[in-house]
Length: 265
Length: 298
Image (cartoon, rainbow over all chains, first blue to last red):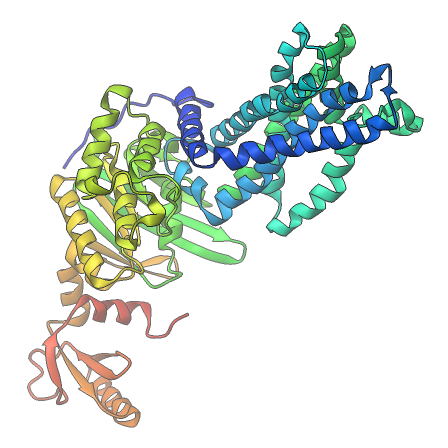
């Protein structure tokens, strides 16, 4: 049976239909686990907010010119972003390629690794954009004054969440065992989480730690959210946003590299 | 114009010091079902993965549906369906949701999506289980769903990697009927299997692989006639007796193979009394398989 050669139309990179296909899979799956995911991503940062805000808040009334509950309430947005992006990206990605073999199925369809990683990270960034607002809403319930600038918070959380989701995907792509995540959580995420200006201002730390803190993407997220609530600081915030974009782009390429190594022999 | 859905020439794939596929040539004409037969580790799954560019060949030329791999693999993947050896369904989703997801991944337009899902459900006979979660399905139903998922976009070529592995005989027969229906419709199929009966029943032609290379190729009946003759004699007995039968038969110019409990002496038609006493039976593809791939597991 002779069959005509197919048209040579080139299928491009990062096609919308491929990204949509992967996103649809995530959205349909989300319907089966949204309760657990929403619970862990919002309740945990909220507990931090309540514990630190009212615990330390009873000892320290004001920090860096802000009421302590308001200081922590804006800071824990970054914690929610981290918890709803980096952690699910690490564990979810590992489970999907190692145990569920989901990515084998997707890559047998007209989807490339670059599109797969991008769509997965976009989905987690969207969730981070939404979940990141939870601590802010709790803080508002406890007295934080709403402001127009807060409308930028989902956007900041999305950009930051994209970077952290890509970070998580990259880590999952490099490790050989799920146990190795312990090293990343203990040696990377916990220090970054604590030295982000969430619970205390970096200005309280030694100078070298303050300088190091400027390389912590979580710190830029904390500062941007805080400024969104209390007033932006012009070019400083533009630079902070730029840092988050650079972090996101760098992690995105690293995640694609790591997953290509993992998924394509 | 080409009449080949798959064309591989001199394909080599190495994993460190191990050569999984070693100079493979493979032709799959449109409208045929070709079986890749071989023991575990023969290179069948690696070959399948190279056809979807999930493994990249170190050497050789690969063309699928007229597209060069790996450069144009995405175009090829849009027109082929894959049933993997290991179940990778979304187990917390329903049957219909699994098909919906892949209708999107295979870029079926909104207007055609519903009809495509219904057709796949009907083909796999899963219409009455459309709302069942996958983790509530039997092993056979999950396999049928995997095949339905690969067919949802009406692919021109279907890759079936060990489609019935681990299933009981009744379920296997059910799947054979499904694959046979596909073949009858004219879908091109490349199927890897280590079940000889499966290849014999379904494949128009078979490639027997061993250690990454093709050691024989042709229609199942031709391969049997060429390598094992028409008839075989099965001789049972104690291990020393089997060794003796084997030695005598070989000395008389017959080919033999062990079955575990017996020795098969092959090509005994027209032996004029030189063949040993035993149960006479037609030679089959399993005889060829064991003869060509070796009696011991590597």
